[in-house]
Image (cartoon, rainbow, N blue to C red):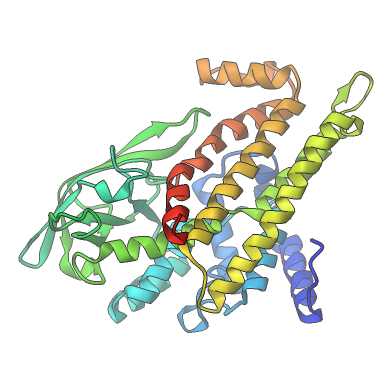
Length: 398
């Protein structure tokens, strides 16, 4: 990684690498290396392995079940995991809801939900985006009317990732109509098994069922499932998005993708020589590696600032923008490295998702195309890159 670690940090890096060699199931690592879709069972299995070691919620404080790691340790763990082809743990409970509950939740909510996130009893999904309220999240229209000791929720959420597996959803709802859009929004915890909830699949451009739309019709939610104060949900939402966007840098995953690209380029032949030996390709690859190094250092600085109580929305947005751009650029170069096979796979995927891809070309070209198509979302979800630029300009006063 070319960073100056202390002896203790280097020892920790070796401990993580040894753990991954010993405990990461080979079949799961192979799926990640081949960019294949993980099943629910795969994700639950890896979740349980990490929790058994105490490394699942690695940014949670010790008193809530985390290991109490430093920013450097978290960075090392993400990097080594990516290079070992380990999947990311299920994000929504661990990396999104957990920090919100720790900061804003009641003692009863912490005592009930945090252990269930850790032991896998609850699979959470995120009820943020709506039709017409994606990047402009404050325009959401899903309502929650307080009637006695229950909220009655009506509305629609979309792009709900892995919602088909979830039994719980943390959801932004409008509890009051106010002149300022960000006011009057509340943060609710909703049981997905309640009557009035319908989950419909959205098939993405790569032919996969990863996201969904969720319809809520007169769904009853107990008042004790309100996180924080009514009408103050935007504070929770911004706090969560800060965690989400910082994590979207995906430095380790960018380096893992670069490693796989170089490995493929050493095999693919162009004019009788490996692609990796050709000056034009090597130049493009070198530029991506420079960008990856810049992103790595910036991400590390941001994590260190957050650990000391600093950090900013602008920094998180910058990491989100640059991380998504870099990974998409790596995906694009990987697809081009497949030569005539890559573009043909893309065209056939977009025209006919049911096409048998095995007859088109090398398996590598199929993987490159599917990854390229799926990762077009990186610059959109979590707030589009255009919105992140607005956040940066407002934060620093441009």
